[in-house]
Image (tube, rainbow, N blue to C red):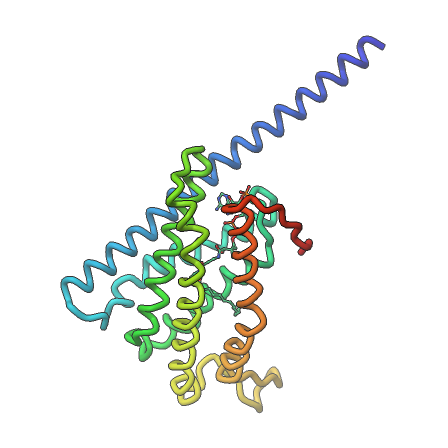
Length: 242
Ligand SMILES: CCCCCCCCCCCCC/C=C/C(=O)SCCNC(=O)CCNC(=O)[C@H](O)C(C)(C)COP(=O)(O)OP(=O)(O)OC[C@H]1O[C@@H](n2cnc3c(N)ncnc32)[C@H](O)[C@@H]1OP(=O)(O)O
């Protein structure tokens, strides 16, 4: 009897130790990840500012930062994994839509269509993303280190009110600017007849993507407004499961 009680205690202790090791590892990884991402977006901010000061124009700016942008934005896919394995308390769907739409903008629109890289709308969403991500990742970093300055928390849960719609306008204008080039070049499209007997038109796909902002964006925006009420005003909000 005594030995089974002892066994129970040993097992409990082992389980607790395992949980603690797991959460220490998760915290260490998240701290490293958030510091790296803050640094990455700061590098982008500095590169954009330097380019503009030196050249006095935004033309050519995208090409000058393309590599760094592609690397850090693509690396954000890891965040979907964080939610999926439960080391951050965020919805996989919300994070997935956010990250995938950004990756789509970078790889399948801006990077693929040279002619639109100097559009003002590209600079608009790049500046908005950069400000957002520097604020967001530094917020997570300071929070993990238990030293969160109030102004960063304030910026995290207020700036998005303006930046989110402005970023979306930049993205939509960029996709809109891409449409004529996509139609003319027939890029990423498959016309019939072909050996797979499949037809795909990237032009119409882009129109569907633009239309999908209508139902999806308000959901992301209202999610952030709920987070704002929870974090800044301490409201208890019951979120629906994914
Ligand atoms: C394939 C093609 C698809 C096309 C589809 C097209 C449709 C697209 C429609 C909409 C497109 C939107 C495009 C986006 C544009 C822009 O980004 S514009 C720029 C402005 N953007 C923003 O302001 C972004 C706002 N969004 C976000 O912040 C997030 O991405 C989010 C996922 C939407 C919301 O964040 P969420 O994580 O839910 O909230 P938080 O309060 O920040 O965090 C909740 C808890 O989780 C912890 N946490 C999260 N991540 C981390 C981390 N990396 N490290 C540590 N901890 C993390 C966080 O601390 C919170 O913890 P608790 O305090 O314990 O709750």
